[in-house]
Image 1 (tube, rainbow, N blue to C red):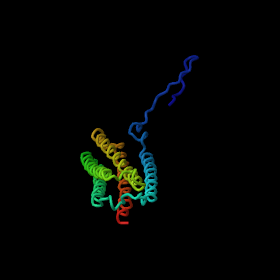
Image 2: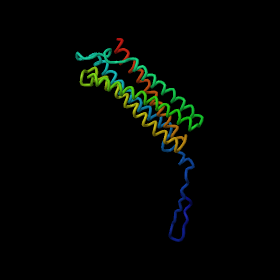
Image 3: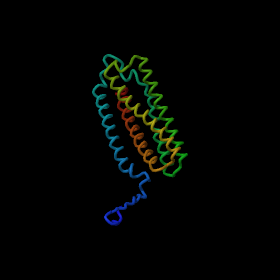
Image 4: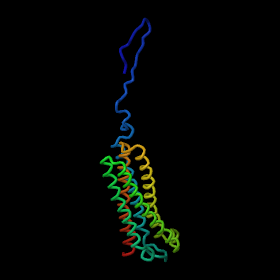
Length: 216
């Protein structure tokens, strides 16, 4: 902000004072909530497109067994149902974490996030066991087009869950260090959208790939 010009003889001097914006360090100018949420929704839409393509590929290749094993020969629906409930329960516990964050309860938020992580790890453990079991039976991605599309679709979802768990652990450390500030609340909301999105995708995987593959 320029003040009036002060003249001393032939020398003209301009004096400037920097006026600091009182809101410049409250965390909003760098990470506006609306911009963050909009950007994350755009990311989720791109992820949705990726899974839509993978579902479409499986719809085309899912019956090409190449004289190999079919879903009815390979899938243990009881085990996959347990994995499904693990992931669904993790969404419920994440909801409890969000409720605690609304109450500004840091310990409660962290506790429910850790419970969510345990359910997510249980889901991943079952998926890894299933992949190992299929490989032991010789049902690898190279065996048939059906298995190639199956491993690609389910494996991509598993990688997303793994990334979500890494994000969750990172967020727990951030909450311990900084508490429920504006930035961490935004991160909680974004991870919530991501985690519930993975639940929706898995319901589609379980219904279309596993259930219809065995029953249909």
